[in-house]
Image: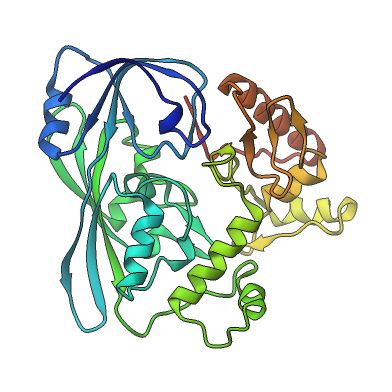
Length: 337
């Protein structure tokens, strides 16, 4: 293990922000991770995974510990399901492709989501009608203070919309080291009823889709709507879709008849944050070397060498404007560092 000094984190965050890690180390085994956590040389550690769900607004003074654990293995299986364990440092989309290559169903709708496997349960990643919690069996974590390993099952993770226990009660207490998924081996249940998947499949002239077809459709949709982080810095959806009362929604419809919604319960609906942001006039807005993406108002982008503070200021302006126009508070999905 070697601790490096003054390392640029630009290659390690999908926003491409050139923040500096005063001290940085990449760990490739559980033993290395435990050893680093036990070190008294750096009492405070900044845990870095795929860097896909954060906006860096400053240099990092703490020791940056890059969790780079690799490996995928089958834990067990029965007639219908297979349990697959993936280590935290595995790229999420590459893991999806691995599952598809082995004809394992359940996460095809989550294709092309940026980031690593270790971040997935923290964020309860989701897309096109599927969330991680739908296929999550358990995860192993390391206690940052004691270096002890424990397991969280699905119920203990307290999954919610882009939420989990790791963002609430036990925030900053554990590091996810691997995740076990419950996937289908046959009789795959396809979710094609959300968003544009059905129309995309029709466009592809596919009437009896496979899990690979659904994945291809999702990839096509995402590539059309979302910028590639390798080309334009971004962190995917910057804001959560807000949930408001049905009464509030009906009031809004009087002034905005075209406002879309998705029912949550008899008393609540989810409103697309992207629609609100576009209606407020921010879609495609460019401020020098950063702005709002032209095809998807949910995505804030770094066109060049923007700094995190400028992008954060834009996010705050968008939040303030949405609150003023619609009396709706939209929360950030991205972690602000």
